Image (tube, rainbow, N blue to C red; front, side, top):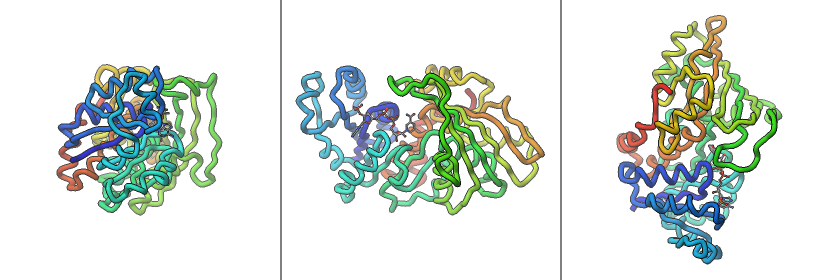
Length: 355
Ligand SMILES: NC(=O)c1ccc[n+]([C@@H]2O[C@H](COP(=O)([O-])OP(=O)(O)OC[C@H]3O[C@@H](n4cnc5c(N)ncnc54)[C@H](OP(=O)(O)O)[C@@H]3O)[C@@H](O)[C@H]2O)c1
């Protein structure tokens, strides 16, 4: 029996549980379960909605009564849900995933086939992004770290421009500025009154985005020259990334566009306002989300000195992390490439060539 258990129902957990539950037959999953941490009235509708879509709830033993008082009947106790799962996907905030690994997941390593954690959990396991380092993931990888949404975006820009035909035959260096939305529309706190710039805490890479992308490519043995900066701006719609990628051979804007469009996980757009790209997702995505790894803004692409590519792209909120989370889950459940690849076709309707 293939059981996928998601820990956390926040910005990434909620859509992931919904996506897995909606597509469970096509994905070859028998049961989707999820752990809800806080028994709060304002989350009751969300929890009931997920249960209605076919996912089963687990809560901490000591909170069962509080959930019942809210009219929610827990199906499993928290650790029981981990123990009976085939794959556990941790979607909790910074550092909690690492704590959960020590406190709970290690106990059930013999029963559970694999554990995944999201962007903030650097060090949880081997970093992974679909289409970037598939060859680095093996059947022995019990713990997988799905890299953050902006790391996905940077990684796919490097892959499209610098790795022609999958080889590192053209990439020289990459510089990136991640212009991050302050909060997701699902979040009620942490909004900021004005742009807030981040320190370059990492001497070699600037911010964690380039560091994470370096580690992602390093799983394949590459040592990339990458550096990133980041800032938050007071918007809730998408992240935007400015890139400057140097390549060895001569390149022109037509070739850049050709390289981007030939990547099946890249969408292009002629829209320059990120809210319009976000809004496209509302009408054509899965519950508002498109699953592309990046949306490249065509009118911003420029080439300088025949070898330096500049442009902007938008990060599809959290869609790329959802895509890689499903891919990593299927790889654990169905290790044969033909089979997990085939099952991934269920997500194809939410990947677009153009937005
Ligand atoms: N937000 C994004 O767009 C995005 C994109 C890519 C990756 N990520 C990554 O995804 C992860 C989660 O981020 P998020 O934005 O989804 O966070 P979030 O919206 O704050 O949600 C966190 C969830 O974790 C639960 N939780 C909190 N403390 C917990 C604990 N001690 N034990 C178990 N569950 C606990 C919360 O439950 P209650 O609400 O019930 O308390 C909530 O459901 C992070 O690693 C982040 O870097 C986020």
